[in-house]
Length: 81
Image (cartoon, one colour):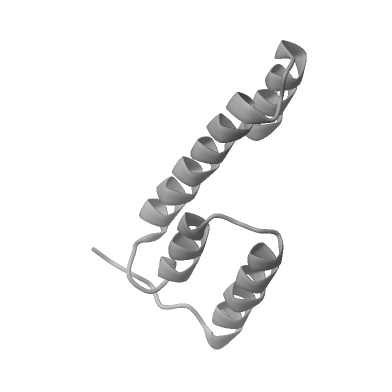
């Protein structure tokens, strides 16, 4: 497994993204993926973890916040893009 270390600037960017996610109420799994990037996990594993987190969030939103089928389709379409 090859893990390329991030530069100090990239680490600072991750820290700022993390702060923004925290203010937006992001799920903890997002933080785990973000902070594993360039540290303990290869890029493709981090990408997969983020995709799984996004899919889980979409499932929660579709089941609770969107009462109409047309809104569900819109959210699903936007997530795929």
